[in-house]
Every structure is written in structure tokens, then in C-alpha cells.
Length: 353
Image 1 (cartoon, helix red, strand yellow):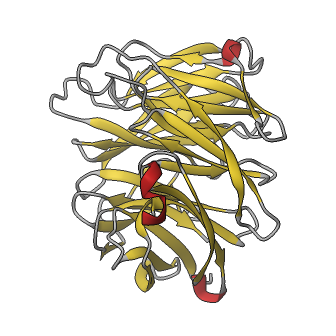
Image 2 (spheres, rainbow, N blue to C red; image 1 turned 30 degrees about the vertical axis):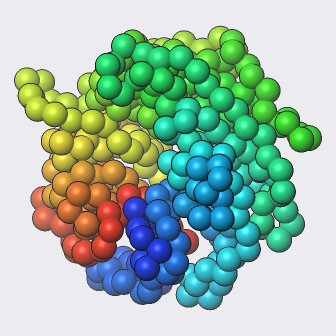
Image 3 (cartoon, helix red, strand yellow; image 1 turned 180 degrees about the horizontal axis):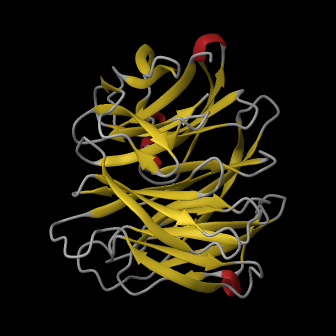
């Protein structure tokens, strides 16, 4: 199998940037291919479906008057090299999430600290349009230090991109927006909101292939919820499970949530206990059952992804500056990592080319 390229987001200074890593699935090895330098704090990345463009949530001084946050567009060239196209302001600090809709007509980002989001139309050349639509959340939750205000953590479309789900950690709510067209394509759809338990702190959301089930990871309660959204405007929370073993005590926050390629397993990462927890997904109902806990073998597993082909899991550890390649099979990780690669400046996002 040919080498797979992976873009790694980080909290890099401009002298560093986005690391491009090559993965050899046959050998179970990684190598640092090169670094796309001069990109500051590219903490979250998105690769377009046709693998032609990369979008980075980052910091750019040209937008200092509005908080320095930016959405930057790059063309992906041979060998994973990036060619800058343009950038637009996030109207806040550096965003924590960036994504596009199914048709890639729009690119949108979440501003965590400001509790706001921004959406821009995508140009024919992959760049971003001049003007965008800003959304602003307000309110608070019961956690004294983490929920004093709204904190939008991600904007994620359903599989058909009819609804954009805005996951707000500060409000314990996933606010729904209908995606249309025009200068202001987002329209509030409050009847489709997903409301979590007080203090849960929802962070990220993923969907099954049909879009009938949503899986939501709660950062503060360290839990995962299953939502029935077959009728989006009448959502039903079906189940909430802990991500921690019974009796475990210690500081922990949940981070990433991903479905396996075959949809049979859901995985989430714990920071503090530093583990990946796997759940089996029941085919008919979409409900979860605990499958197993596995050490991530590094500190602060901020993000992870199933490597294309289904034989490995790649984990980015923010607090030990490492990428770990774990052998994976049917909801299980091997005891020993296949390979460990040290990277600078807090790797926090992995996206495959």
C-alpha cells in the first residue's frame, strides 16, 4: 500500500507551522516529510473531499483589529505541499474548529472564547469570499470556570448538510442552524437543538452514515450521548455513557470522538487518564455498549483518527509532543505502539490526504 500523507495541526509559532507526515501502512512506520512553515497556530484543519484544498483555523496578524483569528485556504500540491490562496478573519481569536458543508459551497469556523461562529462562501479557486455571516451565542452554564459564557467548540454539518450543528460547551446545548444560500445562509432552527445535562460541556459531534444518529462527546462530564435525529426537529436523547472506568478518580476531560470506517465502533479520547475508549455500535438501534479502554501511551490525546485502510489508529498527544501509530483491529488497540514520532509545538489535529 502506498504511503499515506497526514497534515498535523498544532499550536505552532510562525517559525514552525503544519507538519506533513508520511505513514507506511505495510511497515507500520511514520516519517516527517516536511513542514509547511509560516502558519501560526494552525490548531484545526480540514481537507476538502476532492483532496485539492486544505483549510486551517489559525492566527494572522493582518486581522489583529478583529482578534487575529483567521480561516486560511491553501491549494494542496504534489507531495502535500501547500500553496496559500487567501485568508479571511474569524472575527475573534484563533478558531478552534474549521469545516465545510457536503457540497463544499461554504467553509465555517468556531470561535471558542467568544462563543461565536463564522461562515464564508467558497470561491471557485478554493479561496474564501470577501464577506461572511457571523453567529453569536450568549448565556452560561453551571460550571464555575468553564461555563461563565458561551463557548462554541465546533460547527458540524449533518451528512446531507441540511443542518449545521453548533456545539456549545458553555451552554450545554448543540444549537441547530438550517443551511440555505445567499449572503446569510445560516438560519436558527431551535426545535432541532440538542440539550445535554447541566454541566456536561458538549465538545464535538459525529453522525452515522444515514444521519439518523448523532454521537456527542461531553468534555466536562467525560461522557458520550446517543441522539435519535431521524426527525431532526424532534430530537431524542437515547443514551449517555461514561468514558471512564467505574471507580476511577482523577482530573480528566474528554476530547475527540470518531467512528470507525465500517461504523461498527465509536472511539473517544480521555485527557488526564490518557486513554482511548471504544464502544460497539448496535447496527439497528445505533446504541452503544462498552468495548474496552486502552492507554494512548502519551499525555493529552487531543485528537486521533482511523488511518485509511482500517489497520491503524493515529493519536496526537498535545502534552508530550508525540504522534503514536497504534495497530487497530475490531475496536481494539495493540498493547505496544507500532511507531512513535516526536513533533514540536503541541500536535492537536490530524487530517489525512
